[in-house]
Amino acid sequence: MLLHMRYFASLRETLGMEAETIELPAHIEDLKGLREFLAARGPVWADAFAADKALRAAINQELVKASAPLQDQAEVAFFPPVTGG
Image 1 (cartoon, helix red, strand yellow):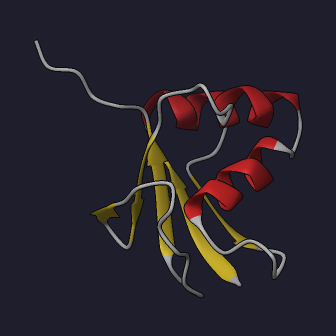
Image 2 (cartoon, rainbow, N blue to C red):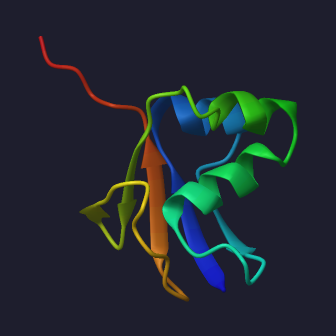
């Protein structure tokens, strides 16, 4: 499965990139699995995508939960939650 990834705000700064295209192993089917896959890329990624980190996600510009299924060629965006003041 091919995904077009987007990273926003402090996540973009931490990872040093704003976008990439990745090929996922066949066994990864949902957003939770994607997040675990990204966290396994190395120490910076593990910290950025740790299970206890508050992150929002969107698939094709629609906010989704961790159980959301992934689709080939989808755009997946991760960003920190926004607080108002």
